[in-house]
Picture 1 (tube, rainbow, N blue to C red):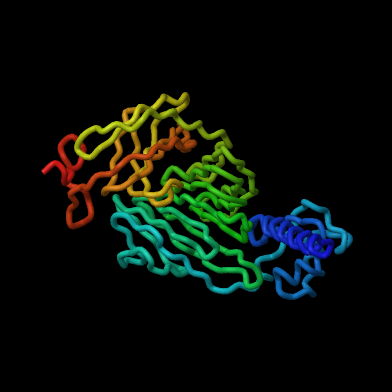
Picture 2 (cartoon, rainbow, N blue to C red):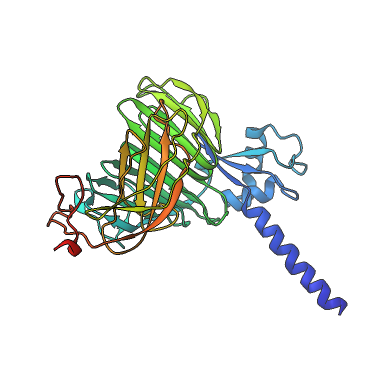
Length: 368
């Protein structure tokens, strides 16, 4: 009995230790991977795990001004140069494509691999979701262009090194969903670099600048003037957003607007639905997005409304999810309110667009 108890204790302790260890990778800052120290860590072990060469402990000691390599401060952050971390190529995969989208000029289809150096472009009705090697998902809504500047994976750990450059449009990221921590995940725009600490955030890039919105976790934002190096990092926590102007100047960090209250979905004719939306103080508009999944990653439409009088529809039959969020005067989009509704079959053109009616609705197959 005692032997069995000891085996169970060792098994549970190992599992708990593994869970704790997996949570320590904390993203990157500039050219350094950030690791948060836990009990039992030594520079020699960490150098061997991440750089694959224990002798690099001396470099880590010097870089981080560590007095005793065997007595590290639990919870402190250790910088490990990414240049010291061996990496292997990684790929992304298109797991959702709605409407028209392309990869380097070639039509993008579900299941296609997406390699480093590719550029994903979405049309006015196009939406794409990519899944990275570590399970992270990236949603690219309509009228956007995103260049996958870097897609790598750490050789010694199941962590990815991913850099996305948004030329225009939005990137909605759900990073490290299994809680394994983050190697490097950066979204770059002409005026800011957003480095994720985990796990759900959005980045907008447009001619007015950039917007970063943190739904869960935290990010490090580095604003900068166009064509300049990233500036000093500022932390943006869960429930907050930051706006950066076209000149690279950060206008401040502010709380995201709360989710509006939604009534039950009601049919509005011509394949459309509506729902009562409570007015959110400080809102200047509302974003309405329809997706196939409850997390809102597999989008089929996204529309902006200047009032609470909203409409939404689905491209076919089945259960769909609608998310409604308020937008403030700085262009930051707030928290989501969600509903489910049933889609109907809509008559589509050969280019993948719904056949529209004069009232803005679509021709449904049940109408004729």
